[in-house]
Amino acid sequence: MKIINPPILHLFLHFIFLNCSPATEFQLKEGDILFQDSDCGPFCDAIEAVTQGIDHYNFSHVGLVMKDSNNQLKVMEAISKGVVLTPLDSFLQRSFDAENRPKVIVGRLNKKYTPLIPEAIAFIHSKMNAQYDAVFDINNDKYYCSELIHLAFQSANNNTPIFTEQPMTYKSPNTNQTFPIWEAYFKALNTEIPEGKPGLNPGGMSRSKYITIVHRYGEPSKQHP
Image 1 (spheres, rainbow, N blue to C red):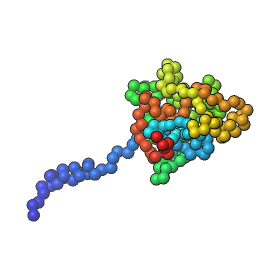
Image 2: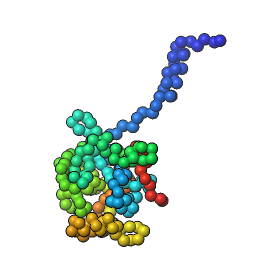
Image 3: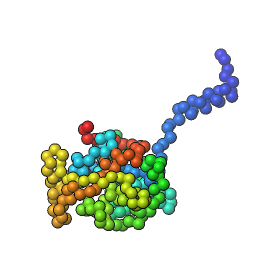
Image 4: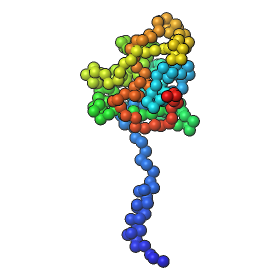
């Protein structure tokens, strides 16, 4: 039997180790945008029915990653109680796919626009505890999820938007009739349905040419092409 020279054996084992080591775990960065299929019931179903995310994914919520003073990752988001900071784990644990993975994918700004991130985060900090925009009015000082992130980066970019506002619809694409859930919602607020008014949604933002999808924590639900 041929005996392997110890230095050669060491190099051989080192080669095997390098090639069998697990892939480097994905690392979130400050400024990453989290698109979430949040499973909030009829409201989320209605949002997803009229908007299509990248790769036909359904998204009903979006948040922005930042680091706090202890270097812990948090998610800046607008939810029903207003503009808040949410621990990353809490955000990821809201909804899961069939494999028990978070139904969240990660968008990262293209390199040209990463210098905007600190000012966008500062903008959201200045809006902390602002009220939720229940009537989805882009011009008031209240915020829904995609509006908050859109206006933050617009402010950071010398008031030039990088996400595109679109006419909003609250109608079913199958019937062209307003979803009953929205009729009841706006009736309770005693306000007209803002059909056709400018706004944004997470699905549309996920298709922006200014971001690249860099990670999928799990598999959000999909619309049929």
